[in-house]
Length: 139
Ligand code: SF4
Ligand code: SF4
Image 1: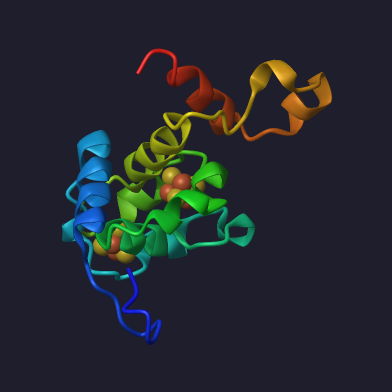
Image 2: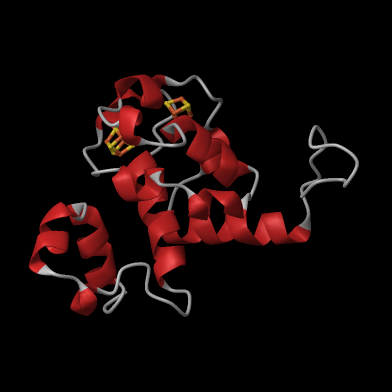
């Protein structure tokens, strides 16, 4: 990703292209349409809880940056579609969030081991995390 000399440099390498293609395959979205207007982020009701704005997640996806997988944002998103209706390029951002969750969940570890959670923890967990865990079994 980086040239090694400065974080100001970014090289779009084969690994970035592969990651980006995976996101587009799973989401069905053409993320290159995004021109970073920020309308999605301005309409999202949960940005205060997020570590990356939705528009930033889309930018990471465009650049094929796997750092997007470490973001809290993909687990905070509640798939409310406020962003989609505001996007002037017709991108369904929630689909991109779901694709990123699926990539995490299809790795060889569980982000959330549902069987190990107490009833109290299950009540606190974002619903989308539970849904995504269950989808993994059928996707
Ligand atoms: S779908 Fe997710 S990212 Fe979009 S506005 Fe709703 S919570 Fe925010
Ligand atoms: S609203 Fe659409 S075009 Fe604007 S930053 Fe968000 S995803 Fe990109």
